[in-house]
Structures are given as C-alpha cells and as structure tokens.
Length: 147
Image 1 (cartoon, helix red, strand yellow):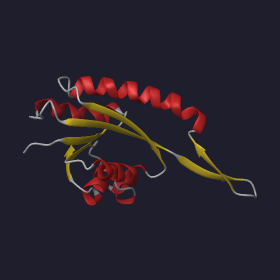
Image 2 (cartoon, helix red, strand yellow):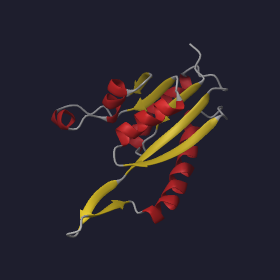
Image 3 (cartoon, one colour):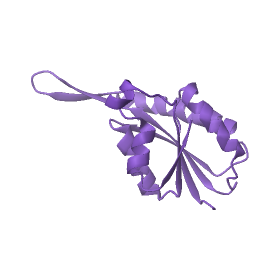
Image 4 (tube, helix red, strand yellow):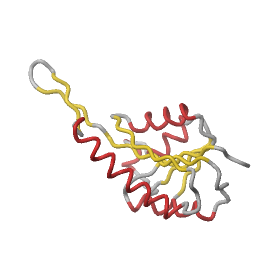
C-alpha cells in the first residue's frame, strides 16, 4: 500500500529509538511526507492562595528546548530514513502528550502512524498505559508499533 503521509512518534530515549531502525528495511516511498514528532511533557502546578497556574518548562525556555530537539530529530532521521528528503520535524509541548499526538495525527490527516515501545509489561503498565497502547486505541488511522 502506498502512503502519502506518515507520522512517527520519536522519543529521545535511545532504548525507544532502537526499534525505529527497522524502518530502514521497510519499503517506504522516498517521496512520502514523513513527520518526526517529539512531545515535551508540560507540567502544570498551582502556587499560592490565589491559585496561580505555572507550567514547566517555562515559556521563555521553550525555544531553546525546541531547537535542541529539532536538531536531535534530524539525527534520528539520518539513522532511520537516510534517503528521505520530504521530512517535517515537529516538537509539541503539552500536558497530555498522548492526546496531543492523536490530535496532531488527525489534524495532519496522516495515512499511517509509527510508534516504538520499550515493551514494558506487568503491574506498572496496568496503572499507566503506554503511549503505544493509547495510539492503538484512539488514533484516527492505522498504527504500527515497533518493539
């Protein structure tokens, strides 16, 4: 099947990036639009009696963080899809990364989504479902999970 737009969720953890190397062996059209997306979790907290809502990372720090992440995504691209030139790099800041990624996929009208997982199992996953599980359940398109 030919895909026009593929969105790949990229973690900055090497352990989660390793499965993405498998994309080299897939027959992905070099003209296909590829989005490499990383989500930075935003932590919200309240301070003081007036309930001032603060977020971390701070707004003024985000451009530097984004610049570093986009540079890292370009390195990942060279490792997993060296022949592809039609690549868009995206860094999202959100307090609910799982939902933000689903929203991005829907907004971009992706044909296909790729996520990698460390393959954790057991009790910890029972209480905190994985990013991949969330995408499988809520994504508006087909999801390939690499392990």
